Length: 369
Ligand SMILES: *Cc1c(COP(=O)(O)O)cnc(C)c1O
Image 1 (cartoon, protein in one colour):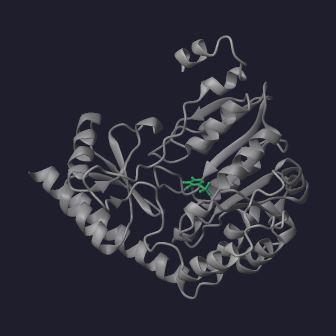
Image 2 (cartoon, rainbow, N blue to C red):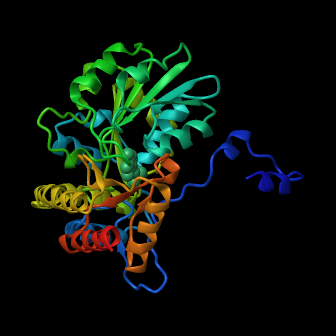
């Protein structure tokens, strides 16, 4: 980073915040020597895209010369109908990452503080630093968000608190009662963002992804994505559900055509795909339990997950690195989570039954052989 700044010394100078973040490195998708590696590195759904979404995007492509509806009206109506929410308070984005960034640009900034948990989702820190916020990280308890630790970090400069629930990369869930206790204890002027990217995978009966708190007051936002269970990560489509005043802010700040009409068409069709959610949820529930059991049998500690991935603890960074290399030799890509402060762990996405079997067998071999 430093060298780059030096080289550019005579040229235009970017804002200094820009150099406080490293370029994002996503889950890898290619492995030399393997034409079709098994990609369990980005928590994409196990079944690919919904067939109806592929068809809808292809049809929409015929009108590619037209600008999309900037207000994404049909998509917001479809989301509202599917989830029982008011379309007027839904704001769509180029992935939910965009909604998260827009919130930070709007409510953060120099002199403000943003709170997230120790192993929380990286985008909060990246977007926070870019906006000039001071990012404060609260220690976790058993790799789970600790509400008291978060509250202890609140100062008069605190503007935003971010929780991914379930969290990525740990997979852990903060119980609803704790989310509500946090909201109640935070000052009214602090925005609570509940990132529910994995909401559809949660099995717990008392779970609410955030809509209830959004509707209960003026200071909570829920974000959702089409990138995980709906299998549209490459289309870039996410949304936020916000109190009317915050939705108004987002609609001023967002780029006018931030959702392409191909993505919107795919999203509408994905919501309508018959049986998709049920099938995906049931598969994930069964395979997550089976993979967790097999990894545990191999002697690994597996963190209890409510999402479509498992975090496996290899006790040391060296052993996690060796396991990663061992899997790569067999054409399997999982996610190193060093940048999340978990260098002794690997994050493994729940893929198809065959993919889960392959990764479980390979790791059994690694652990015992
Ligand atoms: C994957 C993920 C997102 C979303 O991503 P988009 O593809 O930008 O919608 C948001 N939050 C968490 C915690 C995630 O894991």
